[in-house]
Length: 222
Image (cartoon, rainbow, N blue to C red; front, side):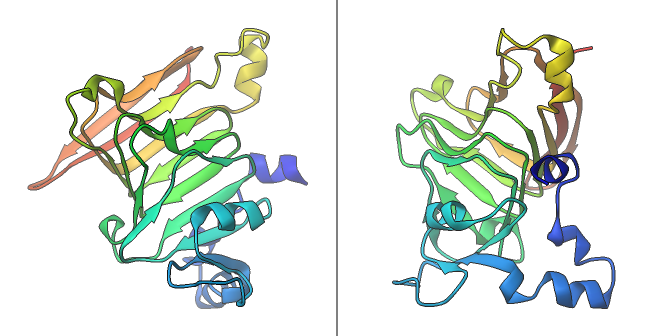
């Protein structure tokens, strides 16, 4: 069951766009986990005061809706199961994840996951640390805060494919990759730092009046 979820990611976010019936089913509160900073205790089922608690309680394939407004603190949160994290606002700037200074990353991924409609800010670290699995990033804003040591900051760091014990053919079958679409990236030494057999490919950039949007993939070299 888990392998099937990893191969074909259960994405209720896109399912909701199919038709009105699917919209009702996919958006029913009982099918989503929610993060609401105003919550002080776990009295309401499926609602959590922090992202870390929501991730810990989630089951493989769950969608976590992160409440808009204010800041959500996220430092070295490890995600080792297939999940979808979505910002609850009208645009990515409405839902901001802040990584504390000096942390390795805001979010660390060891499984197939998706991020959508979120802003992630980090200083002296990286916004997203990708270890393994397929990471999909859509319509997000990744921002490395200004610092004299900017050369230590990256929007995305991926170490997938760097395990010497795995032949490249097996690594490719595991599906380790990063896919970025319609995402703003600001600050840091580089947008992506790669290692192992992964490489930046198929880069596309659109310059808007106030922002620069990126599309690219980080996949195994041919």
